[in-house]
Length: 341
Image (tube, rainbow, N blue to C red):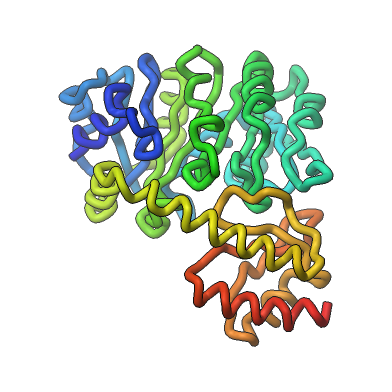
């Protein structure tokens, strides 16, 4: 089975990039899942062991799948407390949290006027102290994306100082995958890490499968930092089926797009501030009250939402798309709850 997944990720199997990212030749793709077979099985696939290593393990606490990759990256670039990560406020916490847990410095920049990641502001904070930059694209929780031309230019320049981690967990959900995918930066030799997961469009969050693509030396360090072991046979079967199903992702993309556009229009119609042009599976908007209070009021109406907040955005929430009947109920609850805000 490990050979099958290695084959699915080879350069020879990327005619449809929406069904698994190719591992660039000369780089190691770590597929993080709980599978106990010998990693040397990858030798029997079209890639050498210097190009792809398949491995797995027990994941600490809530960490699993791509979060194991993020945690390992954070530990390495923390440099035993001497490192510095530059990223945005209101972004996914995996790498920033790991950096702080290992005693390093975290520098965050404000969002743009459209509530997106400000690459110019991030670039201005990079110094000789910086050991990494992190960009989640599409961003979580805001859901929007940075311009791909600007992201490419930023990553190339930032990578001259330190590794740039581009988190593409939600990329399969965006309107234009081909224009925004950044794996070509690795093929060109830039010091970039790409993170992917089966948790989002494939709907396999409970199975904890993901992978990262990085330069061999960095990938080796990440492998040594991450504690692996254990088995999730069901997850491997599901991953293989997901990569083999060429119709699933193209069929799901318009459904996510329709759901997020409907939710975005509902929120805009209620006059709330909202992060522009969402491209993931959720919408991020202002609710006029502490997030915990909003969550409690929505729950009273039979709708469960994220009962947490992000620094600087305590009165904002992130709501994911759902089936039509779920969005119907959500719309009714939003109109009632936000009318009181």
